[in-house]
Image (tube, rainbow, N blue to C red; front, side, top):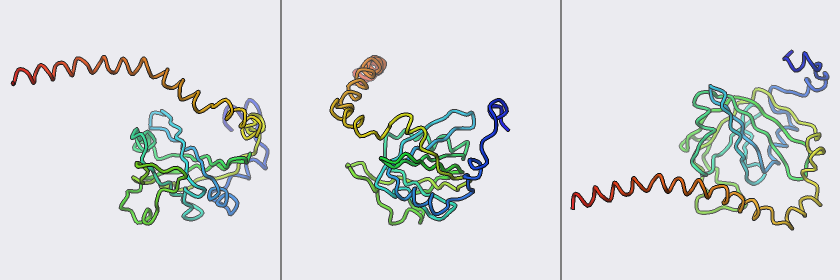
Length: 212
């Protein structure tokens, strides 16, 4: 037992038995129906990252009971998950379906699948709102170590899918509000970055003048 279990007690037998070493039919069906997942990774030093992944239901491919394929659609080019996997192959996926209080968790070992790999052949970006940058760069192959369904308790606590709460958030235009707050939070940083690059621009200009 871990320290928390030693202090608060072990889990029920039913809880431990719900964890499977591979996807059963129910878990695979849930993954195919999920349009959203969170990919969690950590590097060898324990620095963590949680990355949202989205698309049409089934955008994460169930290759078989022991393998999932996550196509990587071009994004912000930080590649934090991939950087972590360079030193630690362990990864986890949490799958969500809108309006459903159940989730599915899959833990395993991930490896990078290159664009030329046959397993990505014929797979196009499966998203609802594509743009000019919507293209598949590569993918992640997750070999399943354990998979299980998570009970709805966190969702009932938070009322995450409550229709009235969602409608109130829409009426308040939460997307616009948080976009504005993000811009405000970035303003000072943007000014600092501009100030840092200004001396470099001046030096380059002066160098250009000296060669003129």
